Image 1: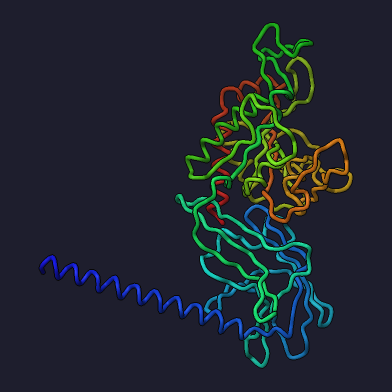
Image 2 (image 1 turned 135 degrees about the vertical axis):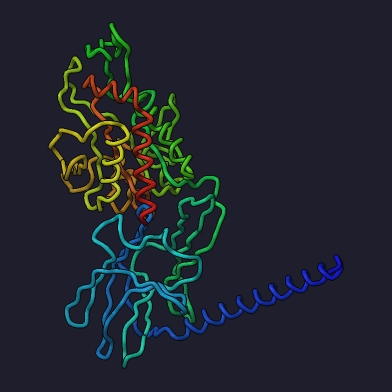
Length: 422
């Protein structure tokens, strides 16, 4: 075949592909319009709560199911295929209430959704036929945007919008590939304390720090530096796995708590899916004689423990450490839930990072604190606070100093393992 004939054939193939693409696009458009016409807008359910926490989206709502309709299911559908969403459904007669999960880090896994346009609806049976009806917004919140985690160098954007068709409201999910914006990250790491707040100070030989915060006979270790060292290692380990990672501070930076890029706000400013706050513990027993030791992973009160358990397992393995001997606030080995008197998480790095999902409340009314701009947000990062060990226990301090990469590798391995299971 001559070069001229090859060129002509190539142009013909390209032309055919363009025509097929146009035909397919028209088909999708007409199918979408046709399906929207089939929705029964005379029946309406209400969404009374919805949020994104980490990689999961949760809904609560209610509806009335009239006589003749049965077998309600919650679905995401594009008119051709559909995904049934698990829910907890309760009813008194014809009045139903539902929620997608009892846990804030459960529900619809946004990472699992494929590209396309989907409608969030309730499907029922009527005379053996499928009938779909919409859910309308009965909250103070509006549209949400979610960027998926970086996988093989690529990302998706999910626009979750309250739209209208012929004056009727419905909720749509619009998913497509995208370039991740420069200011959006997958995971945020907060190295606890900063250059102006060292946290606990420990002496390698177990002696008591002097009044100036130093050690006379051995090397001095500041918790803020130990936190940063592991955080830096963790950032490198996660980046090797392909994730885009943000540290809240540099080693010698001071850091506000709130504002747009504080320790408690950077995760949500950067739309991160996870926020890992790293600390090292102490009992304030002088002379390096603390008997308490080991790892503590703090979680929100109404969390599933899947990721927490993986953190415990992998950190203990890679860092050659053990779970904490502390009993207070313990849920199971290595996992802790500490709550304030009002039932919200005690640590602001869990409570304030999680917005409405975790009961954040720093709204600026208390003048001791700057406002957390995300206290009332329904699109937030999933937060964990890790106390990696007790630095006033000399044996543990030495392991922390010599094995920071092991701690970091264990955390990274746990996160990656968790996400690959989703």
